[in-house]
Image (cartoon, rainbow over all chains, first blue to last red; front, side, top):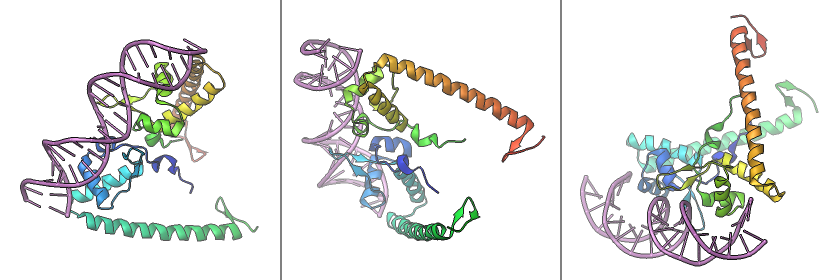
Length: 112
Length: 112
DNA sequence: CGTGTAAGGAATTCTGACACG
DNA sequence: CGTGTAAGGAATTCTGACACG
């Protein structure tokens, strides 16, 4: 259940490297940010910083763009996925509370 | 046994970001490279690229330096650790070959 | 030995705009 | 709408060297 997110989510990659990893141009990457599809951090000097997660998102975006999907539609789709994920998180939390009270460990039940 | 190395090993981080993450100066980081303690990649434009693994190494190096260890000794120590790791890799490989021939699956033995 | 710094240049990134369609 | 490009400036990074110790 616990995931290794520390590296995937850290925004440390410059736009030039993102271009290499995704095959996209700087122009495209900045435009997708303008259209609210990705959200890089900024360093003091204003340079954009991306995470590996951002890169994965960009590759998915690139695929959808190739299929002719518009940025607006992509944003809609991402919003929906986010809602689903959030519902699953709530469900997981409730499940966790149930487990804490009524007990499940390594698949075996117990009473606390 | 299979590890998620794809992100940890990818050299994508610029030196400025490494400074922020490690608290070291550019000068220090470049010097440790000169002393063969780290080995960043280079982009076309000659800028250095580091991985998260490099950053972890640098933090260990920083700790040893604070304790007064010399770069030479650190390099020796790293060499030894590398040898140990390599021996373990060999052992793991042999074990894998044994398993392939005589069989272990999910902890249960089998004959092929 | 390990690190700071000023020096000068090269590579990187940024923004706003014009262009095409 | 999505992307290329030239423009000018600002931030980043690089190397080799001098300094201190």
